[in-house]
Image 1 (cartoon, rainbow, N blue to C red):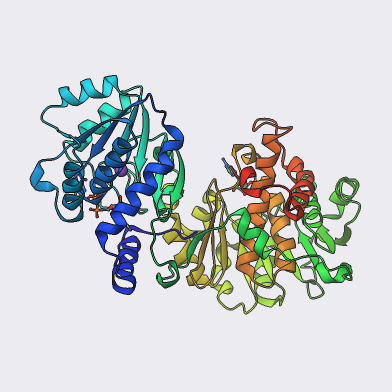
Image 2: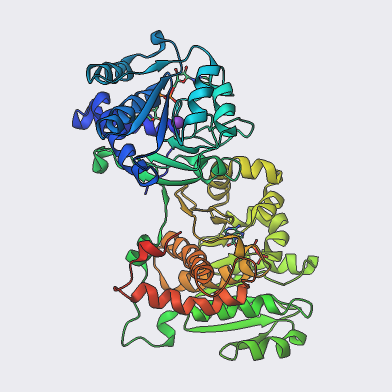
Length: 507
Ligand SMILES: NC(=O)C1=CN([C@@H]2O[C@H](COP(=O)(O)OP(=O)(O)OC[C@H]3O[C@@H](n4cnc5c(N)ncnc54)[C@H](O)[C@@H]3O)[C@@H](O)[C@H]2O)[C@@H](O)CC1
Ligand SMILES: Nc1ncnc2c1ncn2[C@@H]1O[C@H](COP(=O)(O)OP(=O)(O)O)[C@@H](O)[C@H]1O
Ligand SMILES: [K+]
């Protein structure tokens, strides 16, 4: 599923008009009807419904929604919250259809009247503003939004909750706090931003009839379990351990032995053929009981020879001694093996970023926002405000694959292509989750030809496993990173079972 900016959404409309002759009025009818049928899942016949209609095309959708609900026999009060002169174009055409259908509407004269209406209502549908919002809300929207947010009604939003910008970059806004948002055609960037997502509540996307094969490809999409199923490579009946990748995990220390153990075990649980661990000799005895299938290469003072491996993951639990920084630089400059750098490795990489540009073999960096802030010199706040553009700038500049982790993980390729994974839950907000992810990613990197697919699949497998575990057997409180490793077996069994509806298991 594509993810778009406001500008890209307008370009899609334009393409629909130019290529398929689909006029705005038709799209508005399609959008309004699709949203209505989507919202019906949350509305009962006895509910009293208020539909709030604003000045632009989102308001036009509102007239279609109000008409459709009234046609179906629901109890609806349609409120036009701006003067008549503001309703123009396609929205005005739909207002005329609404009136011609014999339905009444109310014009906002005082907030008092609307307040009375909202006090009686069970459901409030926000069709005031959508992707056209610019800057902070002006009146009457700001007052109306405050009024709605304080009422004990179910708040449903059309396309975007009024006041939430479609794009990244803006942080200070006031907005309608929806319990549910019915998104038109494609999610907008703000759905994946930590400061904007809560305004959407739960959400889903409705299709409105755009000519999908003709639309511009903005190379930014949501990656879901269905995509994983399509792209995950099968295990051949005649394969041998060498067919599934020989990986090396470099890291761990006497103080932090668990991290490499989890990375190695997660890689093997995700199908890697062979895994070796290069670590401090003093850490081996505490790691080996946890992962009997792995072999050991004595690490410590030396840069290990990585030439015999199909993939290397480096940095977890390694410590931050500057000597190791020299290693990382040598690995980056000299190794001809795909490299994944995480945790302390990222910290140490900071002084060698330019070396990344020389590499001809793929490099994957897997920072959380704090590590990405360290790498870029930006603040965590700046990263969270505009994660898509900062990721893209960085990946293109240094020629790397970047996995920016979080509740919405953004995977960016060196050519700027982006994928978003929203699987997972706050049970993963615990030390060790990132080490497990690195192991899954290492395994996927060695088994999938397309690295973007490998990384996107790895992120979804990690999050999906955590989601399965908290649905059954665990809670978000007790979940451990090592539970996720063991939970992978159920995920892979689920993926290979056609009898289970995967969609029903998605969050
Ligand atoms: N393919 C599509 O994108 C389709 C979009 N449709 C709807 O059209 C919407 C976009 O329509 P518009 O471009 O008219 O945008 P909006 O419906 O968001 O409204 C723009 C209006 O809001 C006003 N406005 C902007 N910022 C404001 C602020 N801070 N305070 C107060 N008023 C402000 C503008 O002056 C303008 O009158 C979408 O969100 C969707 O709901 C559907 O009708 C049909 C298809
Ligand atoms: N609240 C959350 N919802 C969904 N996923 C989360 C959440 N918190 C953390 N995660 C996931 O857990 C992992 C944490 O990685 P990281 O911060 O590197 O952990 P650590 O280094 O402590 O092991 C990432 O994959 C991240 O996407
Ligand atoms: K809206």
